[in-house]
Image 1: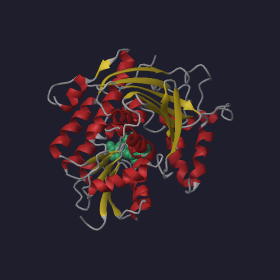
Image 2: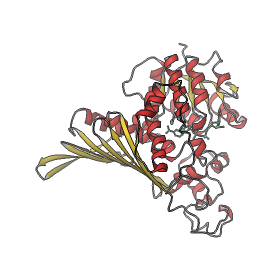
Image 3: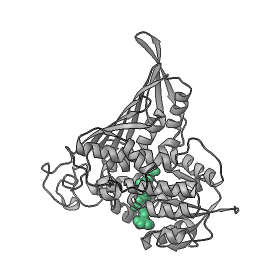
Image 4: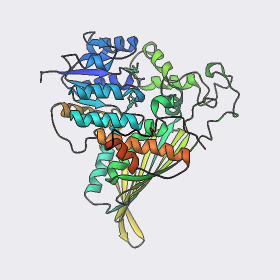
Length: 426
Ligand SMILES: NC(=O)c1ccc[n+]([C@@H]2O[C@H](COP(=O)([O-])OP(=O)(O)OC[C@H]3O[C@@H](n4cnc5c(N)ncnc54)[C@H](O)[C@@H]3O)[C@@H](O)[C@H]2O)c1
């Protein structure tokens, strides 16, 4: 390997280029040598900002992987467009950081799995929550047996007004055919954490999904900027966009364009999006662990909570507080709390992004990491999310074995594709 790692990026948007900022923050010795994107504007902007205009620019991943200056590749295209670049990178033998969710249909998962097996590619999936000190500390505590046998895990993801609006009003996220659905786009991280902590294979899922708050009828249909209620509406685009400027150093003019792409002018009460505004998922694992997970939009803040109940003790924590409490058993009807504060870099996703970026460099350098999520972990999480949505749609609990077999084993039979499609909300 050369002195400097030559990085290629396919999908030069916020997340992809964000890795360059994180790698710089961690002082890694790399050079951005190749960029691929369907948007010429994003290509040029990334080239100017991260490569002093020295990187080669391509329209597709297929072209980028032929570039001889590339040592490793990050794939951060919108979810539906992960498959082709991911397969091109794996077939070319480059180590890859592949963004979550790794694909939006069982067919794409199957193709990615098959290519990963043939190429034996080195891959890390962007499950940044796994890399947070919060969940890593919890995982260590469980591995030490402090909670005893894990029986249930209850977790929750609250999405703030701003995040909810980015979700239902941004350029591609408003389209569930491109995201794969609320569970897959927003919660495949959380499902990966449940898989990781329960340390078992999910066997059955059940889900309910409703859209009962962001519904037409509350306000007349108007475009957001022209709405007479915009001064008082918590979803006012103007208000939400201005809230972006609190913590950024770049000029408003630079960011104005970018942010206006994130929140469009549609009234959230009238958007035709089929996303639920709240959804519950129940997962049953082979080892007996039962998990419940709720995701709720339009909340006052972004927060993730977890409550793990074991045979010897329980643990409750909120990642956004970087703190959790273990309730130790002290008698037949008593428990004693022990508060644990997690030392965490405040940078990106509760400190997960710098650790993930470091693990990508470790992957490139051939270092092992038993906790590293790869293609298999990406698939396990995606299957649960996709079939979870199918359960909400059909109102039935669904066994996962058949779907897992389709993806991991029987790659040649024609299969009933569970393609991302509008979820019929209750
Ligand atoms: N791990 C995390 O915490 C995390 C956080 C944010 C986003 N993501 C994931 O990162 C990915 C990108 O999200 P984003 O927020 O950066 O979106 P974005 O819209 O900011 O960037 C996507 C980029 O991909 C480009 N693009 C679209 N289709 C393409 C194609 N076929 N080939 C090449 N380029 C193409 C777009 O022009 C754009 O520049 C998504 O999969 C998302 O789920 C992960």
